Image (cartoon, rainbow, N blue to C red; front, side):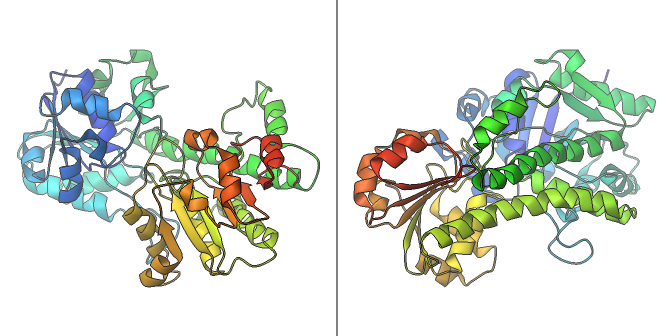
Length: 466
């Protein structure tokens, strides 16, 4: 079997950083180097203060502390790491295209192609190249076409190894993975490459959890897995709207259907909408692929999952406006949470961004508190939408460090992330700080309705009648 001594990962983000840290931790005999052209990000990974790591995941800093500068390294020397590596993971960002053919649906593979061309330019001996980014079907084919036309006699084996990490539990997901998927060619050299990657994971996972497939099955499985999970979230969110018009309680409905063994309880937690880097991007990719092959009905079916998710965010924002007497102009509204879910500092496609954008269109004054997301990140995420000028965003949005102090003279609070600390606050003091009537909108269903009503709040809990 092909021996792996050196691994290089191109991309030091939410997937590359944690995944390589765990591989280094579990495979001390392998040198793992994570490279990125972003100097600031690499500096954060190398910071002596482990609280400054660019990715927040429970358990990550402890693993980095045990492995960094031993067999785990973070560097901007991309070419050097590629040259030394036996196996190269590509874990760069693949956002949805914002231009040209496939705009708004297809994945933008510009970063993937740049990586492939860089590998082809540098490599002098045979390499195993592993797709770790979320990619559309047949990306491996494009990679192979680029790599095989270098004219230098180097043999590249392309593997698809999609990640199935949930932010906030990424380290646990890596250490106790339900399954590892490895897609590759069924040739002798392809099988050897698959076995080599399997050997890496076998250092801590039983071999029966490591599934080997062809490349196309592996790539499509990633998109479909996320599409199915997102479909469940959008389905239960659609029912939350119905519950608010009746006397039904969305938690009771979720619990009742979750007991059906054919359905199960996971991903039936209603909220203001799903976010993160994968769900929306992967579904849009599935929609685009289906349309490309003329499968209009299939595309329309999956696109409805996105439409329902957008509706849930819009509905939450509209309810804030209508409840506050049809105007929020000049009113102080405090956002608790900006990350798309608890236990992560990832804000990609966070519901908070879109709810805030809708309220800013109504000239609301928004104060934001999130325990892990920094001010620059919050403001840049709003700037990215181009709904208004950066100057106007900074005039209307204030990021705060004290969540209780921020509620003084506030008209309303909106809970947009389910951080556990929000449940521990002294809500009586918060109520006393606020203007009366004091409105509280729980978009994550983490507070007790009876307690909040007893304190005196005008309390709105998503999925229940007011």
